[in-house]
Image (cartoon, rainbow, N blue to C red):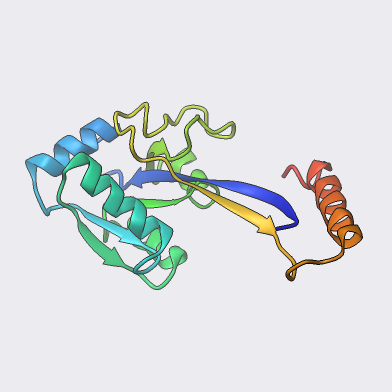
Length: 167
């Protein structure tokens, strides 16, 4: 690794037809109707799939996994009401949460996200064992010369600190 580039918050969102307005209410719906809710993922073994399975295990609920061929298709399925629950990146889902097309129940970081302070954390939602964050790194080949690593680290830091890098 040369430099840490970004962290990505995941968010648990539901289709508006789901009567849950919190993680606790979603768990209640799932427990009252075992197997009735479907959660999507970007495919088997992807982060959203693992987050859904982790929620199922920690909350002891039964939901069906529906793997899609990518995050875009999973989001389209959620927006269309084909599935009811999806974990995905906050940046991908926030526009739909803001316009009411989806309901954001919780972010998976340990703290609320600065761009969505109204969405609680999974811990705040009562599921303290579901904390997930994606980290993005600039990497290079094994054992690059120190000068190259330092330049890569400095350049990425300067870019990320700029106004464009903060977008």
